[in-house]
Image 1 (cartoon, rainbow, N blue to C red):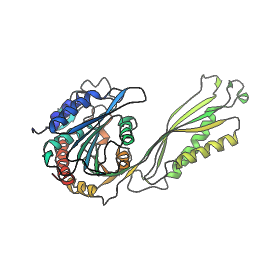
Image 2 (cartoon, rainbow, N blue to C red):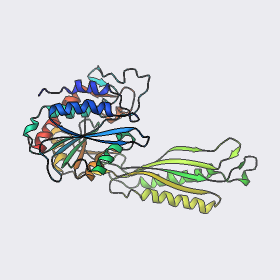
Image 3 (cartoon, helix red, strand yellow):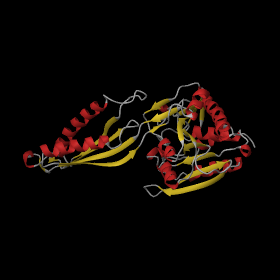
Image 4 (tube, rainbow, N blue to C red):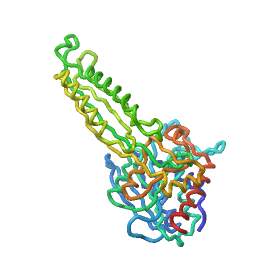
Length: 378
């Protein structure tokens, strides 16, 4: 079987627009064809996203089927964040100074190209344990594809390498991600007679001071493996009011918090609801409520886990922890010990001019090839 050149495959992958709001079937079609040519059996898991757009998760397997958790999964998400339309070469892989530019080159089409390149270098017929390549949709908008795979119980690996740009450093833990909205309602009135109304924006301002104090309180704890070490809290959006001369009757605050693994996911929500109750007691003409829309747990694989130690040895880098989220929690819930690992730097993802170092592609492909041999027994 011909070896796959990760750079050539990455060129084809970048050329397919797979921003999260679009169907990802064209990219899955391309990859499924390559995987079948290599000798993988493939299965599609379609679903519709919250906007009704059909998406596809693809799970492929080489090697023997096993009962229970076995083998290794290489997991990459097919979707990308949007790109500025003034970036004319966003869908054309462009090489310059040892770097490969294009939307998704770093996050995470580079990893997917490396996974297939590694599989092409192994005699898949000789595997003693299953090798899975799992391609997901909608990671960038809430890991929706991975959650669908979890709901379906679509694969049961013993070990999982979750592709993300980590500069080829193994990442064994990351924080969770929670999202909510506080709605403060007051009494509208003419701004010439403010006492006849009750300003929802002024009430939200009092809440903001309480939230800032809560964030400072959270900063006194945490886990030194993370930077920053604590569970963080951020108010990213504030909206309210109808006109400059109306006492505002409603104000909304969008907040997120990123809990350190081991912290209760609902702990911050509980404290925020206490702040809302305190506001209403002090100003009974107001109402305030927190609506939580997302609570994703963090991930934490023990530092002594076999895959962690293997990737440390192969990369020459100690395992670390990050504050951004991945699909690792879903793989852990499927019974795997997940480690996040891949080419490129997260700091250049999600921006115009996203790139992956060309040397990282070959380095990652070689390490994944050895991982397949180690955990699937070729």
